[in-house]
Image: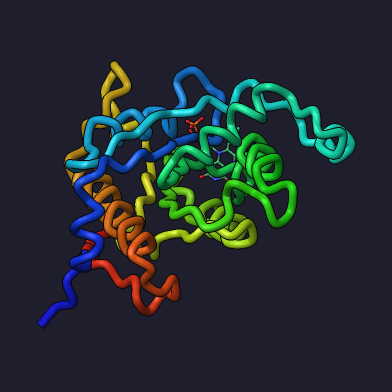
Length: 217
Ligand code: FNR
């Protein structure tokens, strides 16, 4: 018999709407990763809402500024948005086989001060879109590593949302048109919801306990 995805305690908690904060590591107006986040807003399951934070105004990280305790307003807003979210959804482009500097920089800000980062303990799912053939797999590997370093609990790789040749999967209005990708994105959001509820219910965060049912890729 399959293990139920959501425990009894978690089912009770699921009466509340989960607030997910999404952000993308691209500032491009026609960014495919931002479009992927907008598609996620369309596809959120019941009891989940997704707001999108724009990283455009986050300055370059400088520990001197951070240590002064007077952080740039955009950084404070970002950290508050993370604090207020039940879970995170991160969309990464792939730049030179890794995540973009924009994304890494924002995560560096949010990771401090050490021991009091709003990232610590947050559930998260990751995804990415690229015009290339490998669907951001290398960027996602690095992103997963960085998020783990900051204490984020990233859902496992089932499903992996690697959107390759992405320009062909969105229509002229920037809407995600590819049905397979829409299905995988919907599955990823359900996995994130269930993962968040499991963590809330105090279940182990070790990967073995988190195996979700969705396996399509
Ligand atoms: C890229 N791109 C890219 N794509 C890829 O699959 N692997 C890579 O290593 C790179 N490297 C890379 C470096 C730089 C500096 C740029 C600007 C681009 C292509 C990139 O993934 C593609 O442009 C995506 O569309 C970027 O995401 P957004 O802006 O559409 O969200």
